[in-house]
Image (cartoon, rainbow, N blue to C red; front, side, top):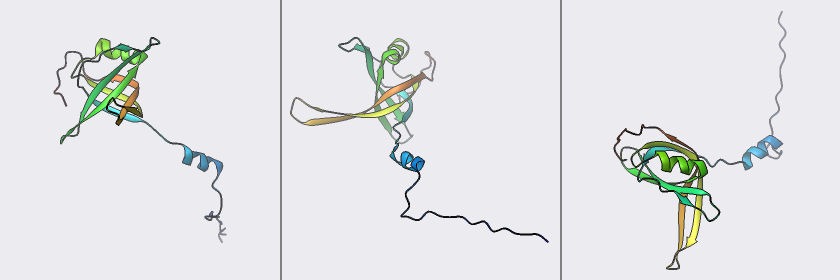
Length: 134
């Protein structure tokens, strides 16, 4: 004869506090963006007042029906790489975080801009590859 043991499970009621690991995961968030698209123009290197290299590029992504244009900020070595090796029309992979900036324009209106601050940049097409602009 076989003996059967019944196992009992307990369920948390809504009045019980979640475990510490569950509380931590609720407060964590993710700000990560991945783009694959083509450069709209040649990158132009700028230098900040304290000597850091920076460039802002526009990347066009296309889902077949319409194109979206994204501003991407590249700092340091990424900016140097982009201005040295990338040209308009090159297919690139960018990953980074979204950042929103606000400022007051000369006309007194508040302006907002959403941009990607890149942490990774990779050229996906060769220098000689001519692809259609997205």
